[in-house]
Length: 355
Image (cartoon, rainbow, N blue to C red):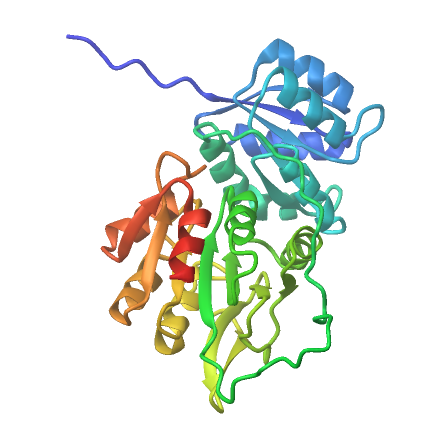
């Protein structure tokens, strides 16, 4: 009779210039079953040497370090020995995270203040979940950001522009994502350039980071992108990112569709919640709108997808072969609401919206 071999512990390398943070992270991770901290480094230079020597499953990374910062570390690591990296970033520098994600980091966790052990304990579950997910991630080579190419604000020429008396309702594109989401969200929106749609994104992300995410997309894309506020109108050419720590819904007021930012309730597993966004849209979304569930841990979006299907709104999901983490797309597919599961959603979605 043979016994199953016990699974090897998840090996983690901690790279952080703060000795206090290294101790706090080590203490938290070593308490988790199935995780082993195999090394620590105080700067990117030492971290790179240890990564090449130890070959850890996952690395936690601080970005602001002496000798070699986190960005240089990521560039060299991804060129020499691609390894999943979780950025542990302070709330004070949210925009730095998206530069790191562009360079190939897997995801991030918002770090509490220096020496705040209680704060580290609060993010422990999130950090451990992302570390474990990172081991099974599917990697795509990071691509350089495209320069913005905004359309002109006015049409040149002397010919009058005919404006119809009654415009057709603006089609909505609803996007839900979590772990591995920012690059995937950007790819889908890039494919929609030139289409008269309004995109609303619920990306699992803490407060302040959603604003930085919106600002980054606004710099990279010709759409006007902003963090959503109550009263924002659903109009063509706009992309709205649901604010972290709150809930975003879509409502009909006076014949127009508007966004409404609402408080999170105890029944909401996430803030923002894809289910809340999708369920609200199911009541008001114009015909021809679409919803997309992208990479992410957990099941958020499954219930909302079912509500959308019942309302006649088509729901698509990222396929298992392309999703960094298949949890959310799989939950949507299992709900029976998904009509298509695709690797390259963006181009297919653009084609469908043109039809």
